[in-house]
Length: 463
Image 1 (spheres, rainbow, N blue to C red):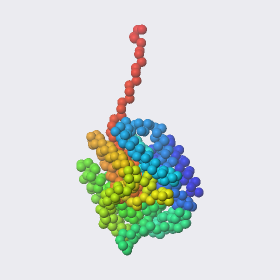
Image 2 (image 1 turned 90 degrees about the vertical axis):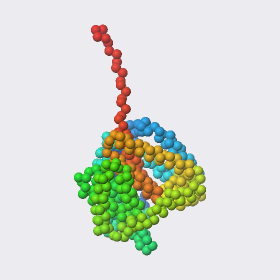
Image 3 (image 1 turned 60 degrees about the vertical axis):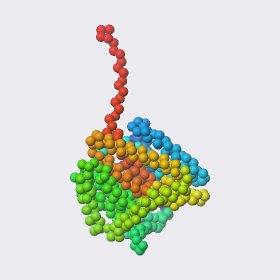
Image 4 (image 1 turned 180 degrees about the horizontal axis):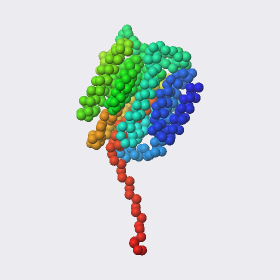
């Protein structure tokens, strides 16, 4: 019954997205939200259901392609990025050939791996062309997404309170869906907390969405302060779920976002932004100490103890060690992606790593990682160019600063642990946000004038 209902929702969403891809965005997110709880209550918890939103995603992109020449319009504004993109895709092709050397099983690994490396690209173009005139158009979708995410987060306190349903809607479940699982986060040698996931399939997935809810609420507080009560309550709600998830790096994402938002904002707006950040911080921390178990707060704080060691280990020490192991082309695309562990039975044993930069090194090797870094460097330059164009046009750059801070905070979290970023829906959100950042250049650049049509020769007067 649930699978049929989800199939019907996906079908209707695809039809709508083909006709209006901007409206399809809302339906795509709804499908992405409900796919996790539906997956848990279907016998066997089919793993393919985490991709239920993909047909809607594809329909949105087809709708965009029917509307305009996507690639041509983008590279017309950014011609210098074409060569770098080609080098990046060439390195992925070489690495994919390396994966195929492990046998037929490598095809599955390539499919999973390429989802991470290129699955975000259609979302990037969707984000790049989503806005028509200004970033004000972004506020209504964020309000809707925030409300939907807040509803989804209801499962977290229900699980925390020990509520039981006849079907496994809450928490982690076994593959057959028969027994609930409990993940524990040890924050010192003797103490731990149970990690909540609510309606989501894992605590880390839930905590990422909760942290994103906090970030969206902070942004809406800056843009629409008249509804400050709603945004502060939503921020407190999201942060409470972050704490109950027990994932410390998700708390760090919010923490880093706030600092980067201040840093990237224009100096004349920093005073107001700082005021709102301090205001919401005071209220949220006060309510957290009243309603959240102190052990969960201690868990979040424990991340500060060894943060410098983890960052150094995953960005310096670990990569330096890997340079002498992975070789020029690495072990191949997908060999460190979740779901491809069976490749170890095909005669491959990859190094154990947790950091995102280390993962890329293992899969792509030195050559592929260098091309990816160059590709990322070009994207950063394009983002800086977008900032400059907005400043030159004397427009409010707060939306641009918030989007950039969101992406950079996730990039820093990825350097420490990459597992959550293998989720296709999260990749969709991040790709869409990157497209929104670079679309600033499109919004402030006047369109090219249409070529004048030739005037037909008119007969002379009196002819």
